[in-house]
Image (cartoon, rainbow, N blue to C red; front, side, top):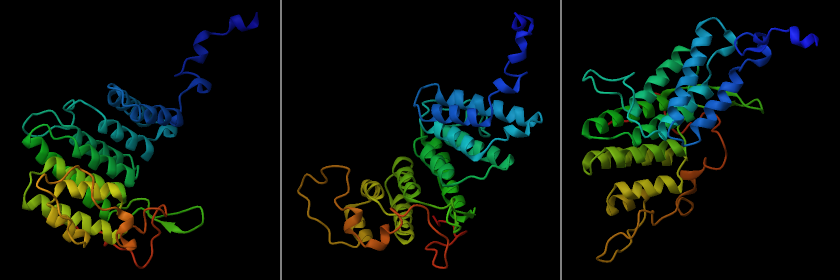
Length: 285
């Protein structure tokens, strides 16, 4: 019939808009792979991101990469078993570890004017927390975790919410503090430095109102029993000669001062005159 006269190449994905994968399609697929935990997920997500950047660089403004895409690619690194491909290595010539690769994606994100949010930085910190393959890797990964933590704490990205209030989608939350404590436990040896950083992180978490049980569990695993009870301002419990029985905190967030966890159930923090942390103040270690 008449349809047989149509050139079949009319509907090739690169030649016909009706069959072209748009930015929403790429975003959905990258997000799916990032959350799949498949071994090849990071590799596929990264190739798709490259494709989006290439199309945008070629002049297709509808393919401008966005915050969600870059953040999903960083999330795929959290679950990746691979050390890296050398794209963002260091002066020693070693392949980049996943923490370095995550930071490299953040830098690309900024280059394309995609604003990072709390999820972006949280995934970088979590990625760093599990990127220590040897002593040098652990040092590099911890430095990246601290850099991401401090950058999140000083970054402001205010926008109106659905009620017209001004909110800041780029601020530390319960995940931030839990992942930062996880990084301390995994990347720092036991000692005064780890105790100092974990204590400061926990105290800021309480001031910010984002304490939850995950934060308490990770604090419990990383500091001495005496320091733990000093930080939560409770009388120490007595343990038998067998010591601690498990890795779970003996205290729960809902048993501690309400102000320490006041923001955990209320969604995103609304900017106000009583902001409980100071933007731009670095964690001193």
